[in-house]
Image 1 (cartoon, helix red, strand yellow):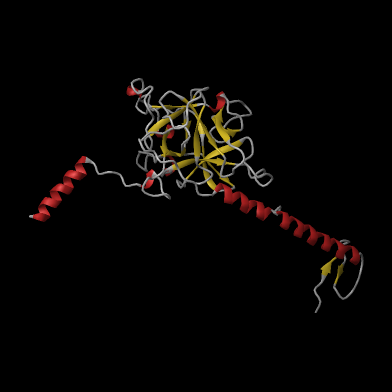
Image 2 (cartoon, helix red, strand yellow; image 1 turned 90 degrees about the vertical axis):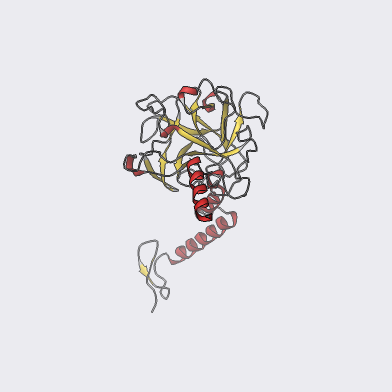
Length: 311
């Protein structure tokens, strides 16, 4: 039995009967097939572009290893907002776990080019594995040599190519306007731009406000909680954790530029960041994967337990 088909004119016909503009339909199908084969050879199919984009954004990256315990200009690092120190019952929407800063390109434009679009939005993701999306390079803005340690109160830039190799974008922010603000929190937005200007200038600030002046000019330690402040607006980089949206990459959390203060006039966990470096004992892990050293109490308990078992 022949399968019934519909011609371009809307008439039903089967391959055994030539009715209507059947010759035109045959040529159209041939043109569609030729166009498909041409795009497949050129790699212009949507599925090919999507796979190529994911290969770049999810490409595994190696973080720089800090030999002296500090971060330096030229280092490749991750920016991680650590888990909320409050109990899950007190945490807003019970969103726990470490979140890393990552690029979030617009779905409508990511398939049209072979690089990150400008401007490019930012988001916080649950993955703390170094990939093209969430790895950044610490850049010099005032002529510092690569390899010199970054100091508290010193300007620096944060750049990423998102796994691509042709162009680097820079983390930036500017004053909130009616047309430029975070979508959910309506605060000052954070984005990636191709211009390394004063809008892309940041500073590291010591976490404890009581010792902030004393640590001014000291090297910034790696893998420790610090504050990252935007130089132009004096607002801190933050992850509110109660604003999220569905993106091309899944459920991700909003990143904005605002200083959240508690009742003691100290920055909340939303503004805390850890500059994560590579694990010197393994090429595929970070310092977050290393076990924490035992505290004095734990060490004393282990000594007592060892003494009891030995007797």
